[in-house]
Length: 325
Image 1 (cartoon, rainbow, N blue to C red):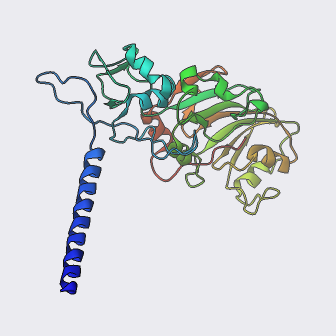
Image 2: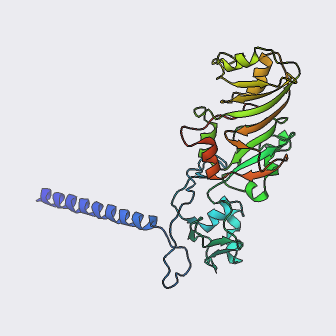
């Protein structure tokens, strides 16, 4: 008799546990369903559609890899997160923006800061305009001399100081694609998309980068052949440099253009030093197929479109490490 009651108790206990698990799964499914955006849907109008928008990915530290700029995802996001991500305001200030009617959907103010919106929805406006580059930014800057590629204010004036204020507030933050030295000028890319940055700086793609170089002595006659040989090994390096193209100006053998397909630390300067020449000025004039057209003056910035990026870099293997200077 005792065994019977114990068996019945076990059976009831198992049934209770199964019911608890089922309720928990039902609650989890309900909580993960997307919420509506918090504005009325007019008669005959479809609900807000999910279109291409940056997913954001894992963020980790501010500015870390995790964006999908110039690529797309299909996730709505909260208004307060969108405002913070695009640099309009801190997330804690989003309620004031919403209360002031600065975020609208199809002309109607969005009522709640936690309402879900899709950044690329053409009906969405912030301060009367479409959201500022919601899929992320790839910017091309004409870097002037005297500024560093660093967020550390102790290192002096920074390339980030030259960006529009809203771009400086984006999250993830804008980062340079590779670096140029403080005294190096020319084409510098910046993006808030970690995956794109990795694609452009990965050593697997071999993106060509061309520099205008001035040195303190004539380039030796054999320098172009040595640079192109693929056998030049710099001091402290285990592997030789990949073949590079050096074109010396015959009118002044202290001037040349150098095209690299990799980006070892201070590579241009170290290659020139291996030829007995010290670099006195260095200017990057191209990155892949991108040039300073549209940013001819130092300090000028323009946005690179996805079409220009694909045309200039291609969409094959991964990106090329892009320092060199």
